[in-house]
Image 1 (spheres, rainbow, N blue to C red):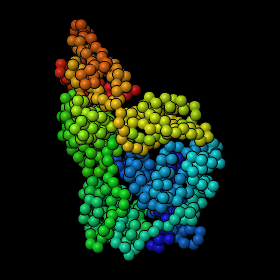
Image 2: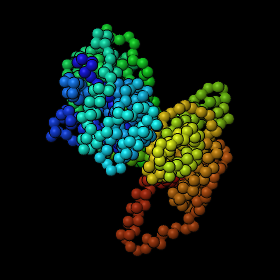
Image 3: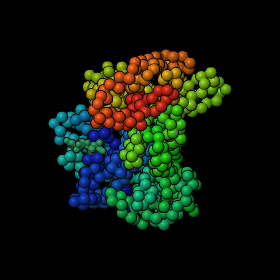
Length: 597
Ligand code: GDP
Ligand code: MG
């Protein structure tokens, strides 16, 4: 295909601003899908992810569009989830295209994910076409939003396209804008093959399907290829494009996007951002900027029923085959038994994996408190990465500890600004910026990631009644006064409840934890002290008083069925208890104690 007749683009938007609806309209208007096959949300990467339970980070579709200039263009649309967890994958896929449609809901205006996503597009040197959606709504204020785009984002929005993805108004203009305002790709057909690995996923029938963007050279069915970073060699079985149905084609040249299959066994063997070349006469230099995505949030996953440990192992191994960014290793906990310490790209990633384990593999899980990676500098000058508070070295060997920090951008209506500032302040935030865009404030904070992984997002939603939007990026490590807080039940440390906290917040956290546990642990025949401690020093304490006598005895009475019911209930309850020294702690206590509120 003639390079000048190709346009590759993505759509960037805040959630619910209409990205999927617009993609559907583009597909529909160009007749890419027959009307009778049209269903809503043809392309949405997150929807597919939910439906099929696989972690898809990018999805492409090839659209043929006969433009007003009389030529037919090939438009390759790449859809990405735009969630912070997958920031690296999204930034790679942005590099696979030359332009973006920036969709903003004209009744809402610019939101935090609008900013985060458009900055990625700007970083990738995209030409950007602003599109104001939902102009059919009475509340739409396209003029105000146009100004806001210019003020807040700093790009020219004077020829923004006004559309309603719902009614179809303005869609032909969007297609023309793609052709006339976005640049054609560049590339050399005669150079050695260089194709970017944009994403991959496992398909039960086809094996691993790899999405690619050809930069230079030509890739053909049957070619033998090499992954330049992982070194894997494979013969191509199928080569094709998504229309959005898979359609085989004999070759893909420079500027084109499509898929290949090559008897690749596991998604782990494919790395987003890798360069694919020919086994012989291939390129010598891979494409620049590759870095594998690294887990940033860790937590322990333990089966509620310890007999399910082997099932959990099988399930985790299976999931890991198809998710290169998910890591795991075995962990034992005195309180929770055998389980796994797992690493995730973020909280959404954690939730997706945990849900799949529970739903698809039918394993009930206890999740320990999520933790970030701390850099622990020892007195001997070495540094260790701490993934689990349980592994914290003795404080006498520790010189100082650094924690990961993020730059968080929050957009919020004026009315809630005070609550947001307080929340950020409470979470040890440092305000970097505060600006206004109409009746909304944009606040930028430097925050410790560890304060965000707990429940920051939920708190933010609740204090702003859902009106705030939030996005973040990692900015690096910084030293702070961090300590390991332990919880002791009946003088015994419960490792699953250990956590890293800032020294100034330790008392508060410790007190909250002890109070909660006092509610959650049933009374025993003896008195049980519940304590929070740093090193050997107790910083908070509650005492669970003893049961005086067997008060339950008399309620059995003579009623046999009632007695049976009670006994059954007790037995069921027993199974969900963990013996801990002399104390029995219900599983539910761990789950609840680790939820912050
Ligand atoms: P996404 O999260 O950006 O993919 O947003 P969706 O495409 O899923 O749209 C979010 C919601 O907005 C859905 O309920 C759509 O039906 C609705 N929507 C999308 N475009 C329009 C529009 O032009 N007008 C109106 N009134 N609603 C729209
Ligand atoms: Mg969507």
